[in-house]
Image (cartoon, rainbow over all chains, first blue to last red):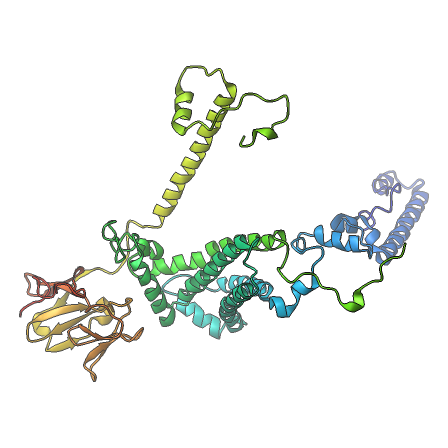
Length: 317
Length: 198
């Protein structure tokens, strides 16, 4: 600690001395030892003093300054800088219109959706420690998680209900944005990004459906991917599918399932889309979505309003 | 490039009128003729490099897409033997439903094999002996004992599989050769191979 916080300049401790002294025999060894002890005492006293200073004012140490960089005075400028220069907070605006963040205006749905997404990523990653995406053991792993893994049932249910909640919240968020007209200029692009995020959320739900490998998910995915048969041009039962040379073994459904039936390939593909590819895509779109909220002028809302009690007397010159 | 007024004064080399076409760019690069206009040469090179980069990315995208279509499948066989015609009595036999996803049906005309896939969205209907019908648990399509739809969203009767007798006298079923009866079209259920008249 004494070394790192930079208070002990110009007081080097000579560690080489003791070994040299002990080799030199008995002559003068006693006085050297005394001097060394005195030195050590001084260093110790200094270290204690350093420690005391560090505890009293940690913000003055070099470690503190290297991490936080900005001097934290209680001024509006300093507070704004604290937000702007922090990687986790820099998406926040330095200042915001109070009426724009009122819960009865935003419903808080965007932020809560993001919170649920973080929860899902966390619980999902933990579930991955016990789940094998294989036809033989997938359902067994679910039973194992439900019955025997410590907190497994809690994790699985958090993930399951969180997924339902996320879909509901995304839709409520979209509904709010629609009701408040927040999709209008200049926010049209962000609305489109939001629609893509809705689609990705639904795809996450759909791919996660198959993973327990139970009857419900299996038949749901059978039905869902059979709809892909009817894709125009790309599905073998769809319009112009036959003209394009589509069969059950080369159409879009085959590409989704990795086969002509919902089997082990389909399970593995659903797992990879669910756990890797779609979360990465969704995260990337979320970054753009949040960034655009700021760049398009913050949360949409009524013009800034001032309470009567806040109106200041105009300065007299 | 698009807005020449942004160029700082004094650097105003004559700009090429427009981007050279890709063909021009390639021609220019592989010809020995020196172009006196250096800006044009640079623009041509840039266009060529950009086309090469985008082209290789495009090829990579095609490879990426092709990757998702496997060449070999480890799926259940579509051709198999199910025994002798005398093994099957009058009516619907469900003993191969779990193994091969088929029902063997014998009626007054003969013996045929129904593929146990609902023509609505591909679930497996249940045979309900007490109601004398097939009923799909997903969306409620109902089929009579010959697999012909009469209720629910199913658009057509269930498909039938090719059947034939092998030299041993056993029935060979081929699920990859299907006989259908699409709505408003000719029934293929009486074609050769769709039914064994035994």
